[in-house]
Figure 1 (spheres, helix red, strand yellow):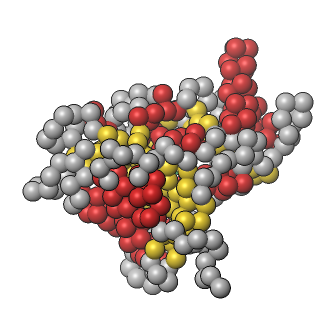
Figure 2 (tube, rainbow, N blue to C red):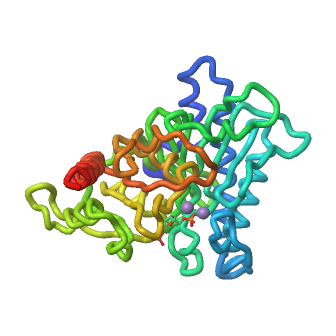
Figure 3 (spheres, rainbow, N blue to C red):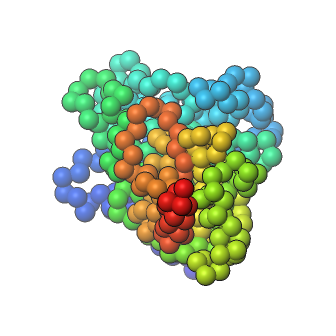
Length: 340
Ligand code: AHG
Ligand code: MN
Ligand code: MN
């Protein structure tokens, strides 16, 4: 009798098998993905014990966005910088928690990849033991040699070579794509390995859930309000009503919708005029993943992956998930705008 459902495929074996389809691959990207998996295991171990050791609560500082930094934000950020920086595979890093670019530590070779991450997503959920995540994004460097530059990390999302997230939920899962399907791995904590559990994830064309922070309703434009009324079931001739689910961790809200079908929105509002989420650390990697799973991501109008980032911490509105639901929002937005 087998211990696991299905064949036993570690994340390392899976990545290596995928890479074998490309005869000229050097293995560096595979190793980089594996490095992220290691970082995730270290962060997961800390989160597991969060209530027992002194890592809950505020670190007493604010990050570049003026947001309160939690101790776990800092711990996750330091862990990822440490793991990713000492590999020889990256030339530069950027993190939601650091104002400036993060160079490779002195003495380490400059690799050919630029990596960006949101070390801990959904930090407001940490202290109440709800799901949080890590998001990462990988580009091939633009610059030819030496230290990586801003241009290496400010590439349009369509140029990502891989992206993924880790969800620290009732189990720990790593989901990634390197352009050949979206694959999910579940951490078996007893052996400390990520094992393949969700091969080739596809998001349903129409979802059953919508996820949005409706406390912002009065601050949205009319198009956004109308689209959400559609999700309530108020436009039955245009769209069937949906069920509402919102945790407040992009990773967890996105993951549910990826598996069950649904749409997540963080629209612009009068307080967050450019939206709240960050293009480089949050929207782009999730957009890359959702498109490779058959879904879509826009800022309400434009495809996220086509936006040329201009600043490291640039924000964007985000509408992401099942393709027909994302199209519905874009149509309503365009119609409402045309009405003036
Ligand atoms: P982070 O913890 O990395 O700052 O991200 C929080 C983000 C995102 O995960 C979530 O979707 C959104 O903020 C929730 O915002 P509201 O509390 O305004 O709904
Ligand atoms: Mn985040
Ligand atoms: Mn964060």
